[in-house]
Image 1: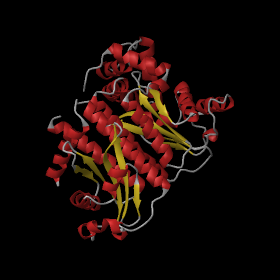
Image 2: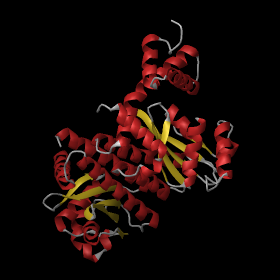
Image 3: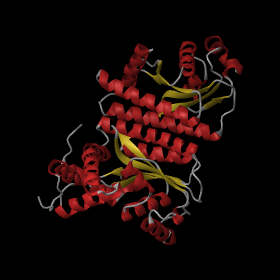
Image 4: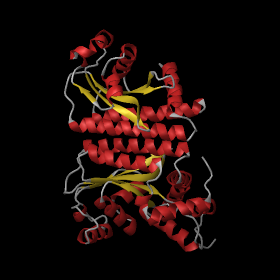
Length: 171
Length: 249
């Protein structure tokens, strides 16, 4: 895929996460995907809090996102700062407005290829409807990636390489 | 934008017309089904459907969450009127709090009543909302939701459903970009290429003959059918020559 094609896919993903944040009425939403080296990469975020969480999770390997990667099921956290297992995250996200986090797996071809994370700046529980909705949106993210990759004869991991490079260049 | 082979397009539309529910073999169709399922899950509604433009400048239904949504779409396509048809033709969200009592679409209301009586619509129908779906600024379809009881639409509900329409637009845009999704992508590609001249033709007739938007569109479609030409070609001819087929020079 050329740069313009990758940028177009990136814009679609931005549109989608912006819509997800608005529809779930959360502060922001971020998307992490596994690249061709099997590393988790931030692909897009709709706000600074989600970006901070994604950076911290990528750096420490702990958090709701990595848990979702391992378990393959959604993880709802009322307050990440109060979870002992996530203690490594605290110094990296304190002050960034990261408290309640809902994370859902992005699944393509029966494999977990990433996670979609909704972030709020205050602690609260997550309703069943919010959890089901985020899971559905994560499935739509997978559809979007599969459509984009297949249309260009690529696999999703290599598309992720380019999307993450683009996001890194933009930030 | 890719060129569309006429035979492929005709086959696409014929297949969709024969059995729209069987057209879910490609990823775009499955994704659109997921979009309407998500809409029904996310909002407090009874059902949801999605219609897209065809080569006649009209609508065809593509996916729906339930039999009642299919029946609502069928009734609008059969009668050529209803909130979702209006949203498509006028490019704005259209609502009704109680379709049975709404005088704007008498034939649609009657067709819905028949569908309920015949049990093709399996649930009661109250409020309806249609919001236009755009690609590259052109209206190419409509997202349609219904309530099972009469209700008043709040501004917040309308804005949220319009926002959800953006999700559907995103998936549609990716499907067209990918050129991998087969028949629906071809249909959408065609619609994007042809809606703009149709809209210009409608605007021309509104100015020339003092018609409202709906009547101008109907006149354009009648002219296309009677001359057996695609509506987009007729619209282009109208804006070039100032005349519809058969009108004296």
